[in-house]
Image (cartoon, rainbow, N blue to C red; front, side, top):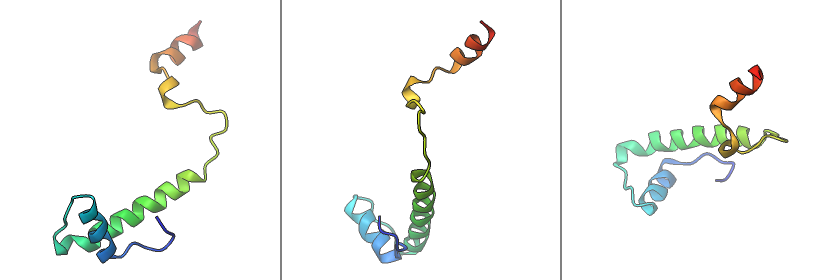
Length: 69
């Protein structure tokens, strides 16, 4: 997605392209929501996760057990 804000007509076009036609009164709300999501994701992309293992490798109960052993 480009750095410019998504316009309501563009949001309608992208939704229609995805098979999700929007009523005209929803175009602006969808564009604003998409812009918000894009701003959050762009912040997450800047994070350095370094040595963080993928979530699939995490075992919830294991950490508590390992700490007591």
